[in-house]
Length: 144
Image (cartoon, rainbow, N blue to C red):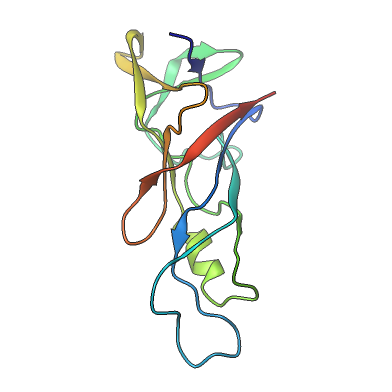
């Protein structure tokens, strides 16, 4: 089966559609009673933030396409841009501060630093994104 090898460079990023988050529209006395689907989240670069190790789920000895190979369970980290249906919104900053985008699927036969390499499959939603009340598989990867 064809799947994408992931690396911690800036040519690969995840995007997500229809994640659900709590929102508090500006001008209203309280947050909305239920999470609202967002239009878009991303780009969540596999190497986010520059020169900073967010997760221990990248290889330190193994490189793929010129950057550190990504292992299963790699979390891109926080500060992922969100485009909400509710705008302006007090909660959007909090949603971005605690955001996540996690690589869930392994390539079982490819080990990078003795752990399975992380991957996305074409046309299958494969990243675990921040969402409320629970995280959900709702993302895809783009590569340049």
